[in-house]
Amino acid sequence: MDNKLYTIGVDVGSSNIKMVLLNYSENPVIIDKDSEKIRKRNPEMVANLLIDHLLEKNNLNIKDIAYIASTGEGEMLTRKRGHFYSMTTHARGGIYFSPGAKTVVDLGALYVRAIKVDDFGKVIDYKMTGQCASGSGQFIENISRYLGLAIEEVGETSLKSTKPELPSGICAVLAETDVINMVSRGISTPDIIKGIHLSIANKVVKLLTSVRAESPVTLTGGMAMNIGMVQAINELAELGKLNLTITSNPDAVYAGALGAAIWGGFRHLKLSSK
Image (cartoon, rainbow, N blue to C red):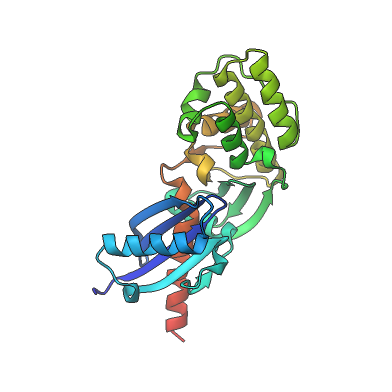
C-alpha cells in the first residue's frame, strides 16, 4: 500500500451500477471507473463483484480503501461506510467534470433535476420533474427498444431527423401510444426519436427557467451521454433565449459515483481529525 488516500463511490441506479475509484486529495484524481447492468440480479451482489473487480485491476486490497461511499439506491450495501443523497453527489461530480459550472442538470433514468450549486458543488437550490416516466431516461430506453434501436444508437439517429414529430401525451403511457401511432403512419425513426428528445428537453428547459439557472450549465447522468438529447436541450434553450452555455462530459454517467467518492474522502478526513 502507498500513501494515497483511496476512496470508492458506488452509484446504484434502477438498471445500472456505476463505480469510481478515486485518489482523494485537494485535487482528486480518478484512478479507474466501471459500470455493470443489474439484469434482475441482486444489486448488492453486482456491486460487490464490481468492487472486487476494480480492486483486482488496480492491484489493491479492500483494506487499502479508506472510504466506500454509496449513492442512489445504494443504501443497502453492507460494505459501504457512508451513504450520500444523489443530488449532492451529482452536484459535486458535475463540478469536477465542469469546473466553474453554476448549474448541474442530472438527467437520470427516472427523473430530471436542475441543481444550482456553489463553487464547491454544494446545493443552493433545485427543481425536479414529477414521477411521470415520460421525462426520463427509462422512457427513451423503452421507446428505443420498441423501435429496434440499441440505446447507444439513439443519439446519432436523432441527429438525422429532418421533421421531428412530438408526442402529444403528457404521461409515458399516452406518449408510448403516440409513438405506436407514429410508426403506423410511417413517421421515420429519426423524426420520432428527435420528437421524444424535444419533449424531454422541453421539461428540462422549464426546470432551468423555474430554478433560474445560471451559466454555465453541465449535464450529468445517463442521458447526458446522448448527443441527440444534449443538442435538443441546447436548441430549446436557445429558442427560449435562456442565454445559457450547456455542455456535457463523456464520463457524465459517472458523476454520481464520482461525487460519492469525493464526499467520502472529505468525510474520512473529517472523522480522522476528531
